[in-house]
Length: 71
Image (cartoon, rainbow, N blue to C red; front, top):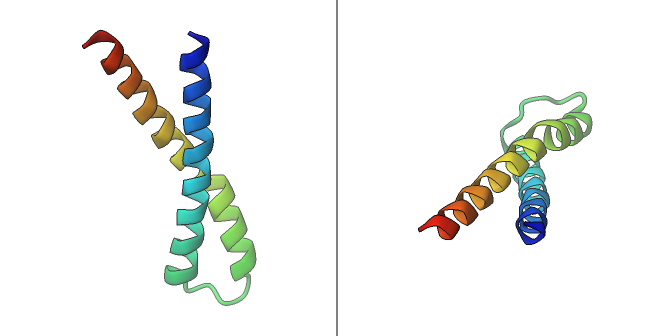
């Protein structure tokens, strides 16, 4: 059970990091904001794309581990 939790937490952190990197890429390339682009970049990446990436990574790993355990 502890191994399950540790793997899930590591996957959540990795998903968060990948989400932040994806957010930086998306905001840099597709934002039309010219006044506060660095602020938009930081806030959007950290508070939106990071948690979304963490949720996706955590969900994928938990589903994978549960399916691997029972199949």
